[in-house]
Amino acid sequence: MPDTLHVKVFRFNPESDVAPKFDHFEVPVFKNMAILDVAMHIQNYMDRSLSFRFSCRIGMCGSCAVYVNGRARLACRTQVSALKTQDITIMPLPNFPIIRDLVVDMEPFFEKWKKIKPYYLPKKEITDPVVMRPDSKEREFIDDMLDCISCGCCYSACSMVATNKEYLGPAALNRAYTLIADKRDAIRVERLNVVDQTYGVWRCHTQFNCAEVCPKDIVPTRSIQNLKRRCVLKKFGLFK
Amino acid sequence: MHAWTWFLQRISAVILVIALGLHIGFLHFSNAGQPLHYSDIMARLNTPVLISLDILLLIFGLYHALYGLYAVFLDFDSGKKERVVVLGLLVAMGLGFVGFGIFGLFYTTHSL
Image 1: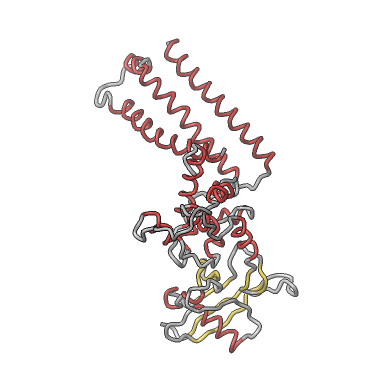
Image 2 (image 1 turned 45 degrees about the horizontal axis):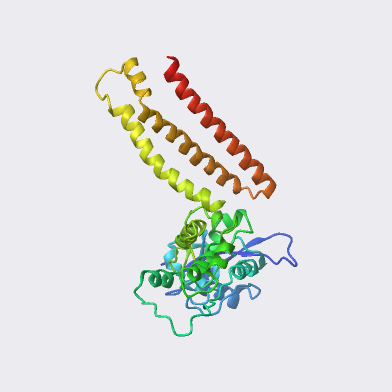
């Protein structure tokens, strides 16, 4: 393990800077150091103006996602040693407007979430708790996909989002699937109509970039493919 | 429309795998090791089953390819008007090639 890291950090303040630039820092290494520790060290001891976002520090909140050495990652869960290099480049997540330095505006991302109505609405006829066996096929699949922490890594890695800002993106579609696959949900058909659009599920080219970068090992592409199948079933009148 | 075209693309993919396998099988393995004669080829091209197979390949191969082209076109973030125009052109191109292909197939087998 080297003693020092050569860290290149993206800097940009849209209110005062004409163009973005990179600042270079030599950061001392300590055991079990994460990328978030690197950013905190820079902010505490080298440049107090560095802006970045974090909260839980344990990979739960998804707020510290940044682009490290060419890949979207959670800063708190990315060990420096895992990068296997002394040279580290930290940038804000691609496909998001930059607020300042490493902080991006998540508004476009959550606007897409709003479109699919990301909350569960129970059917009116359901009064008693519904029995859904935890080991049922349906439950097992939904459970895996529910681990999403809406960090935006998938959204930033998706080349379809990069080419069209209207595309709902992997995270929102994955969330839509967890609700559409839930038979207790009252607005499954309405949700399916929202995703059954040119810039809904049909925009996905199954490149699996989202799955590649997901810090929770979710495969949104699987959810999207399942949504496409349900769209076809709907056309045949088999989705109710 | 997307659901149907996507579904048909999946169907065409399965048909292509089967039809292409049979096509290659008939072409390269039916007379394996034997010298290839013109009369054998003509006889093969006059077999209704093989003609049907070639027409299947033509229709589904073209559909699969042109749908792929359309999907690539969508990546260019075009407007609805452009999408309709390109879709119309691709459909016309597809129908034209299918007609030309079927004509060629029957013209070749019946005029030689």
